[in-house]
Amino acid sequence: MPSPSPDLLSVANELYGLPLGDFVPTRNTRAKQARKDGDTDLAWAIQGLAKPSTAAWLVNLMVRHMSEEIGQVLELGETLRRAQGDLDAKQLRALGQQRRKLLAAVVDKGRDLAAEQDQKVSGSVAEQAADTLQAAMADETAAAALRTGLLVQPMSATGLGSVDLEGVVAVPDALGEAAPRASGRKASPRRARAGKDEEAERKAATERARSAVEEAERAARKAGREVKSQEEKVSRLEARALQLRSEIDELRRRLVDREHALMDAEDRLEMAEDARDSATAAAEEAEDALEDARRTLRGLQGRS
Image 1 (tube, helix red, strand yellow):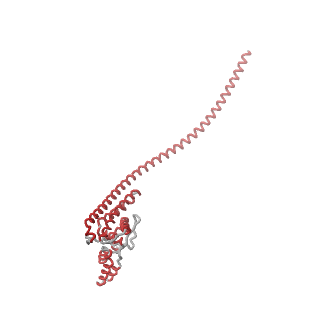
Image 2 (cartoon, helix red, strand yellow):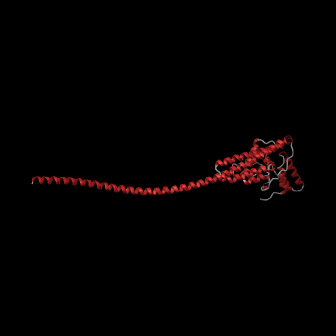
Image 3 (cartoon, helix red, strand yellow):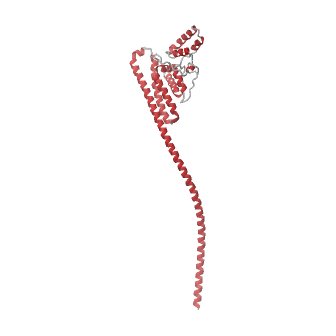
């Protein structure tokens, strides 16, 4: 991927780090100055930089001022992408809850930053910002787009998968570049009135985000151990099932042999029963003949 013009990238980094209301007048000023300097191509490139939507501006603001929290979001995204293939639906739901908790804490802090610049953030805008962070968690290229801090439109993803980046980044060639980290913010009346409270809230939000990441990591490690345990159990049961199938096959073979032996024994039994009946009939006939012979003998002896 070609590198963006250093001058264009410098101007873009300035513009997309400004309060939303300052974007257009500052862009026009920079384009006018480029024309005055004789760099017509740069002037046209600057003039072509689109004003970000409120949600994209909010995310760009967070990238510049909340690098630690954004790093936690992207780190959790990497963990989820690595773990996705190993987790069942129940475990993915648990990690999804951790992701939502982290995103809610980070976006809440981003809304506080926007308020310091007198920029109102509606619930729908906050939701689009959360969707953008979730898209960066789901897709590595979307994460690179997020890091530029040059978003023009919010991103979205339905799960862990590729994200359409068409028209999302103001300077597409800037993918792989990181937005300059803000060194500080101009004081505002709101911040002057409640600086200590806001600082405490930022620290609390950071702590909630860190806790959410730690909890998600623990859940991922636990899920990995559970997967390994279940795989071992499956292997044992597969071996046992194979053994039982072998034993059943042997028993079926032996049953067939016994059935054949039974049929042969029944045939021989029938033949033996027939022979016994014939022998019994012959014996009865012999008894009758013997009795007749005895009677004849006794008659002859009586006439002597």
